[in-house]
Picture (cartoon, rainbow, N blue to C red):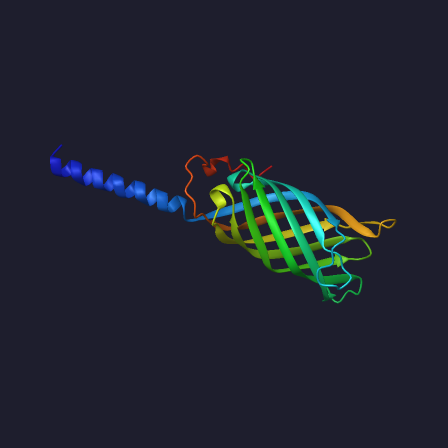
Length: 194
């Protein structure tokens, strides 16, 4: 092999390794399934009489997602499908936090969301859209966006005047990693096909 060919191959390998580092720190798909419990809190941030709620869910998906916790305050916005017993509420405030197997956190903020809830059966469906706003570990400085459809059933504890119940959903989006940590390969993504 000639010296010139060795230099060219060396340059190509150097460029390829640099490009792979850029790709790692770039936009990556993120998806997960989650299911857990939603429960009312005693907090009413906007003073409309509807209490904020908290979702505590187990998650499985990209980057080794393990749990998803969400604090949400809704605001009554009307009725769904012209059915007087199905309330339409918008997400007035909502902050999700995803925890991963290695302890890293990814923070988000819902920018648009809604839910339709049948007050007779307690069944509800909805969707949230939002942005990522950083985190810890490999997600420090992360940005990106997500869409998360969800559904569940609200069960009332009349003695306490609060609601709780099962909730499940999916999350699809992209995350832009600002932090290159080779020790955390996303091959621990866990299949979403369970």
